[in-house]
Image 1 (cartoon, rainbow, N blue to C red):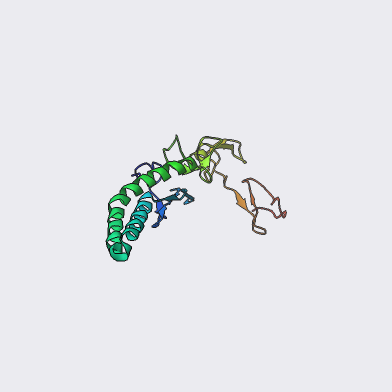
Image 2 (tube, one colour):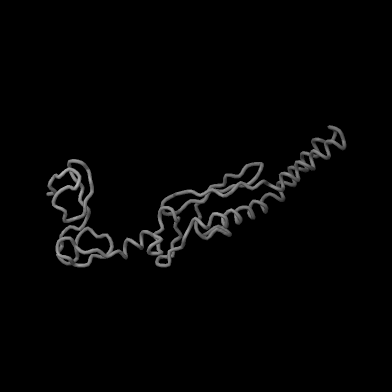
Length: 180
């Protein structure tokens, strides 16, 4: 379920304070966060000006009354202002997210989006086709074994230096150690 005005995530943090509103929205796949611009609270500004004005008009005698009135104004108006600020912040940050046409998930552009294939990186990985290094059959996605010959198509890791190489490689391209 999305938050009003924020279709791409339900994972966000409210960074607002007495002076204004700010939110950080997170990619639900990788957790990368994107902060909205800080927006000053109009309710807070009006409340402060009213409190200061009454305090000056009546000299310190009505300061407590002015402060209570200011507090009441904030309690009534601030939730609506915050709701609008959340929707506005959501719209501001939405450009950092894309909705995958394949699976419908919203993901961040920085880490989880494959712009070349115009889909999320998870769906793009499923769509990738590569030849099996052993028999040449087309292998779709990122399986561990070729569906034709049954041999491993998973990347190899060198036991000596930790370098990763494509399946079917006989020797480590970094240190020359033979792959088993």
